[in-house]
Length: 98
Image (cartoon, rainbow, N blue to C red; front, side):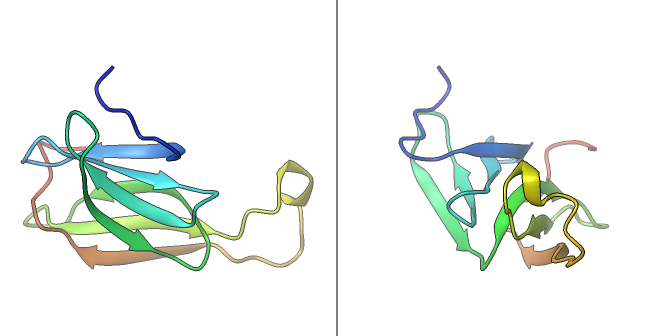
């Protein structure tokens, strides 16, 4: 096991240059950065579920977060669209190219 995430529910992950992992956590409406062993380094709270994280940009430090309100599988066809791509500056650049 690389990391025990406790109550974390990982979805869509990416690796940074410090060998830490960012993961989206849909039910807890957040993105979390953890190191091997499970130490939480940073948490970004959102107002909707985070499905994916990716580090990109010219210097590899913008963290892109794909988020939307999750209404369960039955709500996937709802007329209201709430998806967003959010960005924050990450403390470490991406590890290689996505």
